[in-house]
Image (cartoon, rainbow, N blue to C red; front, side, top):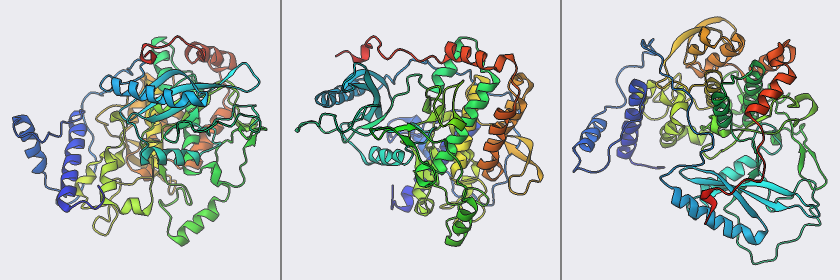
Length: 522
């Protein structure tokens, strides 16, 4: 909606304000009204939306404690569900097209992994030269028969995280099988169908964190403390990776095999030259958030939830970050991600449009805060200099959504909607003073969740603070979690044997060869 008229922009603001007012007050996504004057209900909704006067006069007075019962739904969903019903036929047609294009490249369709409103993910394999086993990988493409700019940008964006242990890895095409010899592989003979509109990714057979939560729920098998800490550590390191890609850290080098494939990924870290980057960022004016991530990438994922957190393998990673008891957790699906540049922050249309870019239970205060109703164009411009929360798009959105994901792990419930604020005490990340602040996660401190370590629940609640400035710094947060995992004397329920039994029961790796699903039958 670039260069939209003032009337179009006002309509965008009114619709977005109505949308979040309904969510925050009633906990439901509203009907925005269709352009159909023959329907009285549509006319009433549209009349209400167009009557909203924005920006409001005065100023936002802040949050208030809300009374009433906690609105949390038991974590639901079918772990093996692969897609929506409304576009099943379109997804099946896309699978057929992809299968036909891939066959001349000696790629065999194994099964469809899932589809959404825009894209479809399928599992393919190819024979490893000179060996009997096959190499498996994921192919992702649009359901519509095209390669739009968004998929091309997603491919380029995710390439930046090559070698990052806690980010789902892309594969080159044609994929060089692990242990294969690139010089000996057969060169495809033209003409063959182009696969430019396809994104290739590593295959993680254990599936998503969503699937694991469903399995643990159905097995009445709560997460061991050690596993909860491990998942949280993985998510924090994924936040570090998104802000500081290993590819931009010249001192981090991945170990590669003879074919050039990454053999040992790197464990993400905050670069040691942080102070130098900080000074440089202050001098050149690129400093985004005081005391936070100078010189960082500024990437916001906008779609972190249990379905986009995938379980990798056991025993992967460098020696100091080897996942021996619980599989590594990786964040994937960067289709909604955006680099928060100055041009982005100066675009009033992008700032308002990205408010609605998240799954229903995983919106962040930067998106849903009522403070937006007092914003004229863009927060923190000359017209709106005092926004505390609205539009503060940064890596702290990633951290907030990771904490909401941890809520699902700890409570076996979805994050509550509407998000209900309450107050808690924290040590202010800026100056270390003790301060009472608003958080949307204090309910996780309730004694009914006491089977999970209080220290972890307190960190999760702080990551869910309303103001981004009150959420922990990445460096201190990672030090606390890693230090706890390293120094904790685990009891019998969290020792190596107990954790491995729990993983085998709830997160086993399924066989690569499975019966053909009805969806994949022509």
